[in-house]
Length: 278
Ligand code: FPP
Image (cartoon, rainbow, N blue to C red; front, side, top):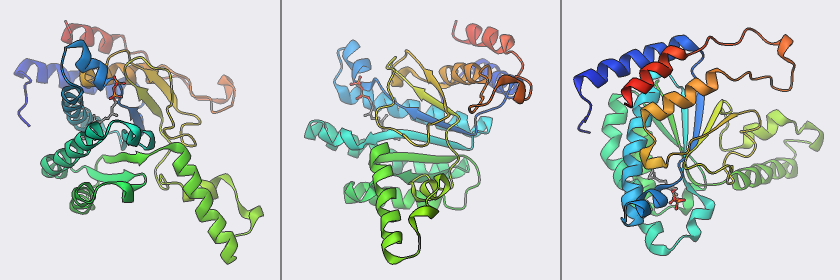
């Protein structure tokens, strides 16, 4: 990728990142509903494909910065179960975009120590996409940095349904009894097994919906709604979401007094962000 960043913006960005790390906890797992590609394009009198293409640029920037600031898991809602109902042309175009992005970006992801994974009903994807996905997964399997989970042909209801089926099979074969079903057992059968629940859910384009994303896993996630459309959501918008997250008090059903101290404020980062975005 050719970086469009100037030397000065790099310095500002390094400063922002180090302040962000000092000002509070960096979320271990960030999940994103990337919304508004179509509206972004419409506003500019461009075809929807232009919005999706620019959306891939946002994916690049956000993946890169998550690796840099120490996010351990990033889950991107790239194609939902419901997205299959879109016009055939748009589905094909999204599949091609995904395939090309995987093919073009895997080397760079590998160089940046990113591990590529996927959740969803992967067998429903075209074979060419599956092949690129498998190549990316295999190539990056030993990487120890950011884990990038692509949610493809995924929905929360699909996930819970497939988990219930697997559990029912185990009961049928006698390896599990109904009274052994606990929350932990259910989690172990979800597509996200071994991935901690998201700390922060970001949705772009100002919509206040979960849209059948990680229904089980989002139980205690902090939610950040950004008004900008996904193609305009870049690192500075992510920093704003994290600053907001750092100010939240996560009680997990408890009361304030049972928790440790709240994280420090982040006025300085806000000032720098204001300066960077002009
Ligand atoms: C939502 O915008 C976006 C999608 C359905 C697809 C997201 C896919 C990408 C950004 C590209 C591929 C991703 C990777 C991981 C390389 P929308 O079309 O629903 O927008 P609208 O609500 O404005 O119509």
